[in-house]
Amino acid sequence: MIGLNRPGQLNAQAAQDEPPAIRNLTKNQLYLLLSETYLLPAIDSKGLNRAYLVGVYTDQNYRLNLLEYKRFEAELTPSQQKKINLVNLAYILRKLNALLVEEGRRTLGFPDFIIPEESWLTKVARYVDRKNVMEFFQASIDPMGVPLTVSERVHNGRNLAYRFLFDGNALLDNQKVYHSVKDISESYRRIISRRIDLQDLEQQLNAMRVRLHDEESVLKANIFKSATTIVAIAQQDNFNPDDLYIEGDDRALANRVQLQEVCRLLKYIYCTDSVLDRTQEVLDLTNNNFARAQN
Image (cartoon, rainbow, N blue to C red; front, side):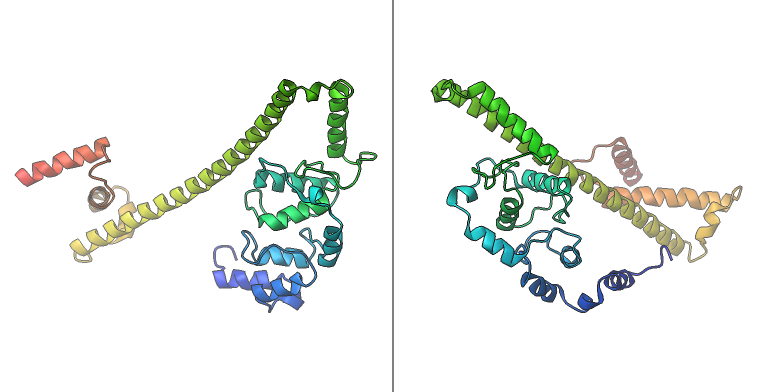
């Protein structure tokens, strides 16, 4: 029932949704089991939680057979493993997931800004992107051939445009030309990197706003609870919170006014920075308290 599930019950339900063969395994046990068959990030890699491992086990996340990868890696040349400079891993993660989706395969299973171990991400990228469509590596493994996806067609089209502009004219042998187009390429990569970083910061900022709102709600509730307790004890337990909402009752009105004033004072005492807070309410309360002290 909504609102009555305890955290332990929710965890138990999540476990029940897992395949029976792994329900009783710890995260470490499940990791060891899967690592015998699949290439996995390090166990302490960011984002490698139980949900990710269950996704690998159930084939909901992209998984790379370990033996198959080792055979593939053994045939790579040094240039095929060498990465380009100016690489933003969040950018690579996003591009790699997009390629996998375009090819009808599962995504990696990590959110956009949860970056797994770089070594693992690099290995998977090299295995998946053999035509170097992502331009993550300095050399491709397979020739383009007939482009099969939109990404491959765009990449191939860019190569054709490059040949049209520069083939047979030795323009790139000119240092001024070479450095000018190199500056364009590197500037573009920096801009893309900054955009990804900005999106990451905006996501963090939005999450911080949610947490701040939650904390402010808790604080407001705590102030009201404390004020209610103070008023009740001050009235020697002749105070009933339910009476606050009786319309037209003089005592209820007086209690509401008193409760409001106690809330204001509690906020002023415990939730005011003497140096930084300069709201009109703080200044008014400060002046009122000085006036009370003088009287």
